[in-house]
Length: 360
Image 1 (cartoon, rainbow, N blue to C red):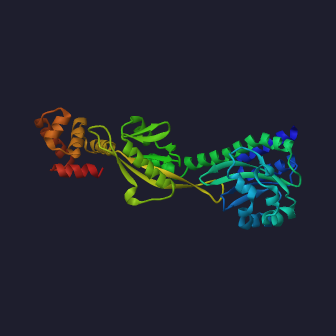
Image 2: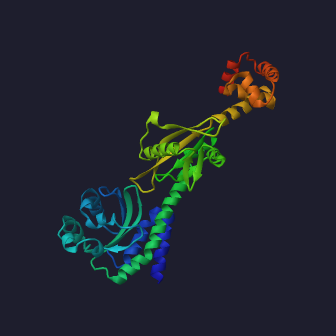
Image 3: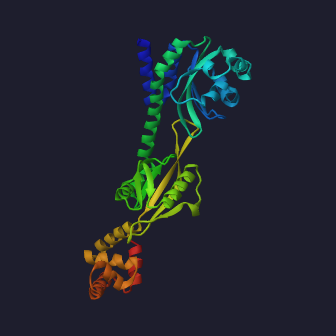
């Protein structure tokens, strides 16, 4: 029991510090009566990294470069759910396996005659696995012990990922997005919102144009939602097409549509050799930007709130009569306020006023 508790402690230490995995793997090999325990990140054809307790580095290198594609056990693991411990006898035909080049040239010289394995995580074609190997056939008790340790191994690996993602998203480029005058969201491969700046959260809570339903972005129309999903899927695959990366999202009457720009946002996974592709979505609200520009102009030139609101109406277009109607005032009042705005700002035409506001 003390050995099991000690191993669990080592596992969670590795969860907080990935460089500690070799120590945890050594303890895992000892507890299961194995020669070695290895942890690897891999696809069906590629092994960018292996952490091994005892395997000779030359063998580790030759496995990654040549033998991985012939390891029937690892290939069979691609059909196994995360967190399910299995033995070689459960996954492969033993006679065929022992006739393979991999077994005779790589396993046999090291005494790796039997093994147990599990998937720690899977994502977009790659997976992280742990395998223990040794001379003895792993019986029911060996598998029972390995299965008891499995949830701790999975949670520790998830902790590695969570800590890395939290650090990555809490630092660097995304922190600067709080200072933008547009909403910004990071979206995962399945459309889930990873994080958003304050302005994006405000837009989503407003619920006009873009909303969040069951963790997924939705637009006012089915067609716009489908178009947005296509842009996100394209970006998550790492594709950026300038003319196809923007979308107009309609809103309620009297409000300008939102402009959505979707781009790839690669983020380095803590496991060397893999990148996780996200999509970054920028959302521009023309009305909000104009309100902000109007407020800056009001403060700069000493406009009254009524004059600032009129300036906004003028910029939105429609002329003096339209502005009067929208503001619920007479055309004469509009004319008087506009004269005051011209005097304070130094412009003499409505077109100049529009240009002044657009420059704010």
